[in-house]
Image (cartoon, rainbow, N blue to C red; front, side, top):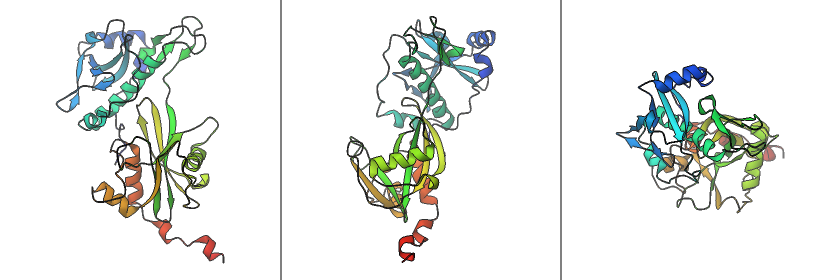
Length: 303
């Protein structure tokens, strides 16, 4: 199962972004279309993203060229009169579930870059208002000539496994019964493996050796703009010391309990939604042979 928001088929057409004449040509194309949304939540029509003419862009709006969809130029626009969007609409996943995979991925990219424009209107060097360039894939300062580009924040999301069980956590304010994989931002000067070990220890008290961490998959996450990096690592024990400022609860679950949860049968937790990469991560782990359950306990064999 591929992670949510992946599988885009659009041609991002970077060659057009830096070519003013080529950009003018795609903007003048009568087929050019503008993504319809409200507060960055997409309009859905007959199970597809809704589009309008490029002329519908708000007055003074900042238009982003998303790319070519089978030759058709696609755009999204940020309205400078609107404040940045805070959080996300709880109904967004139900709406996105109606979309084809490629369209959900296209929406994720559009949301991330437009949200970035709405949050980064001033130069980080001198504070001067900036203006879009490169077809909306950057901003340039007219005062100091600094160039700024959309950021993506790396986030590790992981399962620690110990003797046939995986570690799940529950955030505060989540729907009743919902658990998911632990997660946290990669810090400067830190590898993915080191971030997995640190975040697992900080949030649950469980130690994971960085050398045991293995990569599973990645996913763009447009709320607002992260790259989720899914991993599995071997825990050195199962004792818990929960950071209650981060999590409400942490539990160990077996593969049978995960299977029951995904099947809608009685289980100690509700699974993460299909669009979340934690869903993919759990399905991957559930399908693996439980080698850890068959491995001898080193501390006992040494006696």
